[in-house]
Image 1 (tube, helix red, strand yellow):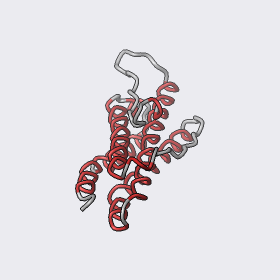
Image 2 (cartoon, one colour):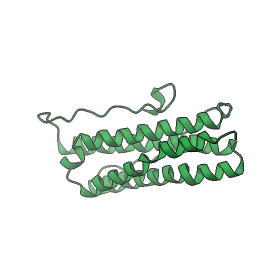
Image 3 (cartoon, helix red, strand yellow):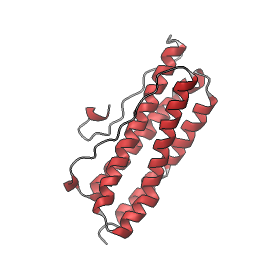
Image 4 (cartoon, one colour):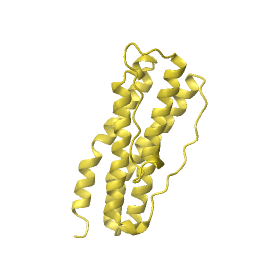
Length: 172
């Protein structure tokens, strides 16, 4: 979980759903919902870090951060939350409430917050990749879920390069 690591952004590992391992469809759906929820939690943390970074930047750089990073993370977070709710509804599982995350001390500086935001977004992307690699989305037979996971992962893929470019120009 988010709070289990000292930096607050280490992604938990997915369970091993290897061929030959028996599990029910209900267990598979619950596990999938849990993984999607954890990926969304990482994006909530990323948004909190980006919000703190925004507050520490000059207006022009803050606008760049919002345009190049925050909006993308916010879009990915919204999609994961919606995906979680719709999948739960389709399969009669309980809905989950997602909460805002806390970023930490403001004295860390904008660069540190951006780095931590990208680590959290990367952890979310890694969770999604592991979930896709596990074949669990295929086994539960939900094409909408598979397509949405791929879209969120695509959104997150471009973030590290944009973040590096933004951080490179800080303090100039």
